[in-house]
Amino acid sequence: MFTERVKSANLECMSKRSSRKKFRFLGIGTAILAIFVLGFTVLKLSFKSSFCANSVSCISDLSGNYDPNAKTGQFMGEKVSVPSYIAEEPVVKNNVLGTVPPEAKRIEVDLTNQMLYAYQNNQVVMSFPISSGKWHPTPTGTFHIWVKLRYTRMTGGMGADAYDLPNVPWVMFFANDQVGEGEGFSLHGAYWHNNFGHPMSHGCVNISPENAEKLYEWADPPTEGNTTYATAANPGTEVVIYGTAPGVVGQ
Image (cartoon, rainbow, N blue to C red; front, side, top):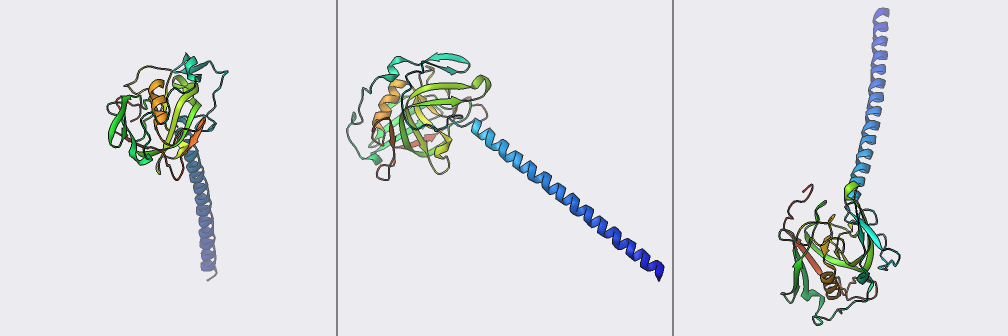
């Protein structure tokens, strides 16, 4: 009997030690898993932010103000000059094509053919080539312009793809329920290249400055100063983006 009690006690002790080891290993495993999940989340957010359309400045400045001290920028490792005409007063007005209700206007971006079409009462009133995302795809879907900025600074990218572009003109940020305002996607003028008709951006829709100005003054909400927000009464012109852009990295 005594021997059996000793054996039973030993077995019980071993069982407790084994349980403690299991709990200890379980605790360590849980901690490692938590650290891994946290690290992966941070990495994912960091990776995502590096591909935001305007990845460093990402709509952090919505003043729409012109920077008179910014004469040069950088794109693809090359220095680019900011054209002097960018600072000039607008030459076209919002009613250039007549006043129509907001719902009568629509912008379509055909990524496959790198073309933009502006519709008024279902008739094309403007069309021109654009440059969509090359280093990160331009999102597809139906959006609305939520704010218009006369100017903004766009900085971001990584390594050879880095860019720092002051006084980007005629900027129209768009968003929907899937692609939030913080993503920083927009239609805007691009003075640093003339390769429209081919993907050239980090996710935004590049437009030649002269065409961007016309679109900006035509699109809703109606322009008021350097920054114009959409409202409940005027939610901004609808932007429909479709197709597949050729040669997009990571697509």
